[in-house]
Amino acid sequence: MIKPERLQKGDTIGIIAPAGPPDQEKLQQAIPFFESLGLKVKLGQHINEIHGYLAGTDQQRLKDFHTMIADPVIKAIFFARGGYGTGRIVSSLDYELIRKNPKIIWGYSDITYLHTAIRQQTGLVTFHGPMVASDIGKEAFDDFTAEMFLQLFEPATYVYSEKVSSLHVISPGNSTGMLVGGNLSLIVSTLGTPFEIDTNDKLLLLEDIGEEPYRVDGMLNQLKLAGKLEEAAGVILGDFADTETTLKHSLTLDQVFSDYLSKLNCPVLCGFKIGHCFPHFAVPLGVEAELSADTKTLTIQAGVK
Image 1 (cartoon, rainbow, N blue to C red):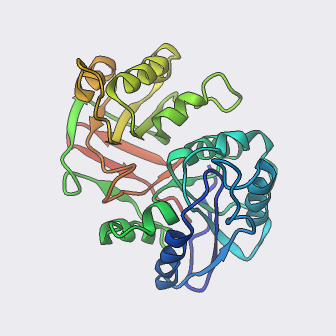
Image 2 (cartoon, rainbow, N blue to C red):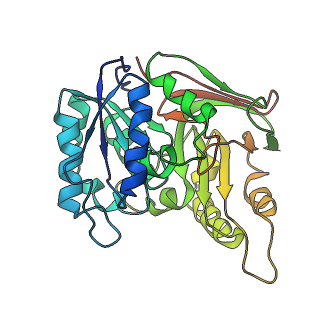
């Protein structure tokens, strides 16, 4: 496990778009937030590019990423938005360059593919947190979500309890392990690839948006058949937004979760405000954590040093 260096006031951070093209107006609206933290901001060379549903060609998005990684002035990389596209570039990433230049990498949703590939190829801790244009640039961006960025300035253990949101136990128990995961559909898309997620003895975080219960059912079934659920030391269910069904008859999302997760021999809790939501509890991935159904808490070690 490699932890990146903490941020300090006066540091420069980079913003790039490795997936879909960001809303440029919201991108600009978000920059003052970083400046309020005492940070300087540098935008990627191709952040204005649009190539269909991608923020530039694969080569342009790769160049921006590698440039930010190699630049010693850049102390952290934040992603403008998710959407789709990071899975197209993971096989071309220079993982040795990342390993030799460990720095804070922050995003979620489609960025799950990058989180998984980078962690498993380099051991670098990365951060599952709100993105620049699609979250920070919104009026709904709240003080609690903003405070989660402070974990980048000072190593600290964070405890998620019912003080943040109501939590429900699907399977009892207490367990420790490395925190991994992110967006459910992106995790499933790694299966059968060189970047297939390793859940063995790990605490698996799952969240998603816009997926009906039958779709979540299918993805959980695929994880089950691939052995990923049985191998896990625990499952953390984050926010599942916009899951209303169009079907005349449907199982509820809670029924789907119960079908696949209630009989696991490990703790499973749902209700975490982690994902496409506000407030958004940002977490480091690749660090040790403890999930307790007894106390309804998730305790997460610091992601920076």
